[in-house]
Image (cartoon, rainbow, N blue to C red):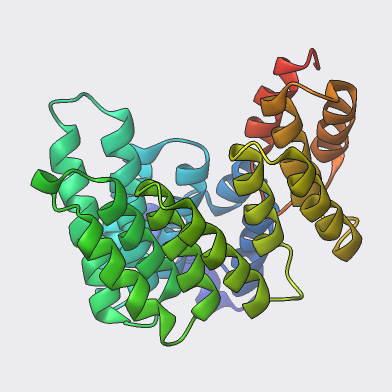
Length: 287
């Protein structure tokens, strides 16, 4: 390490200026995040808050650990550093959304409005950001009209995303149809989603859950078996199967075994959390 670099670090420490984390350490922290070890990721980033990518990762760690206030604070810093970054703005909307869900009812409407504004700004920055469009859709679908929600707005977002991500559009349209209790339409959209992504299990799992909710137990089992055949070692398949069995109050030993296997598996941030799996496991007498 050069004397000049050591001198820079010493001056930064004396002045209380946070050092910028190395690219290698940031990549390691990002990998820990992707594999759901949020506390370890955060520990690796401790005091290294000098640039936007680091701020963004710290914010996501706090978000996944359930500290939405700190997550919001770091996301506001990240978006201030890179105001044109659509992904950062989308996560800011998510953090405000969770604060709206978990805060005092007096403050919830304000946080909800900030969430909507962040989602809308994220889409404005990148009209092809599928995650941001999906988050905005969910907001419009579930928020009351006085907070800017509305089924017509949700439908418009689903149409926008259909131009470049047809499978996601089908999923969104299925959600809207279920909200409207148009179950035949919802089923057709889910079938279309499966056809659009024939090599992915996400569509099959969503369809299996839909069928189970409709009381079509045998059909749900058949679709789950297809997902299992496609990706036999996918933890998400085990979790979904266990979740359905527990809700239907059948084959609880199988559900317990699947959840135990899930708890031991290496999962990613895109899978259901192990906290959720642990809550399901308690319902069937697991530790």
